Length: 441
Image 1 (cartoon, helix red, strand yellow):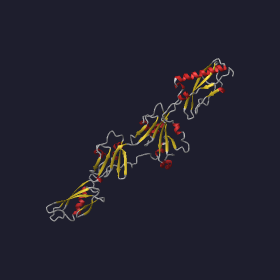
Image 2 (cartoon, helix red, strand yellow):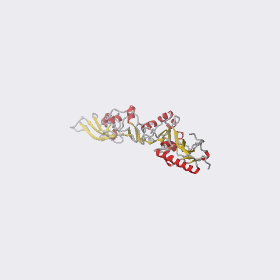
Image 3 (spheres, one colour):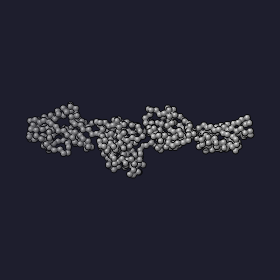
Image 4 (cartoon, one colour):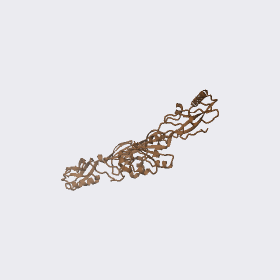
């Protein structure tokens, strides 16, 4: 080999150098999750969150929502109690006639105790028979019984009192300091007045929710919404059951976020921007602000909705927080219970300067050793190592820095391209596609 011939180029790639370009991370890159989104049969659908997308998503079925029938209207009722099945009546009959069938000669009144209103709403009164009283106020029930007695005791007068049964009371089950069974003193008793009678809701309860069980129907709303909307303070009915409990709904925070945890809902409605704020934002040095993903699984029935449903059960929404459209759209994207908010990692570019100094010294020493061997073999006067630094890309579009170390002869002439030798690691190219010579130094 001629002395004047430039020897070769060494692209020095060691395991230590490779380690410098790959850092440990705790979350996926966006393209790692979404790269198969457009493939048929991928099993999930991918939607960038934009202003144009929101109307379509709003028309899709809700996911993991509370199984309730909204909330009953406030309405109103009678200011007095109403006789209902299971109530117990006490009837006191006053009759001053000498030949009364109802009282003895020495008595002026005759009590009739424990008249239980049956399921049909009637009570049995001696000498009269069955009398319909359910749905009446105590005053009207008294008048009805008195009218029926007038056929046998024209001058008789009646007093009626009653003990409310199960259908004239409500149960305050939990969430207050004094739960229990409470009698409905009138038919204008509201939920908030019942909660007040039970001692109120603890201030330590997170986003308390109220559930109203009425017959076979469940209603639910938040306490805050009830406080803010007087028209929602529904009037109770006999047999109602009221439950106050913390909001059990949550979403999941993962990745390069302020925290990774199950995040409880703090209000009835939560949007994506509020959810990102609740998780403490995203990590400044790790997160990719262009790759905030919302993962959601729809029921199979949602696919049957056609245009009013997603393409797949599994859906990924991508939020770009670097654009105004992305931020405004995130504010209008509703978060549902059990959604996953994933802050993906940003691509990290690490140059050789980030490696430990000892590694640099070792690399430089290896170059000199290589130089000396070439000198002894080919008789070169001197050979000095220099390097070229640049950036190329991994096939996954992940930028990677590289260091090209070049041996030059004493005349500092550029090394001919045919003698370029490049050492490659699997899936990594350490030279850009548009590489050209001579290398600018």
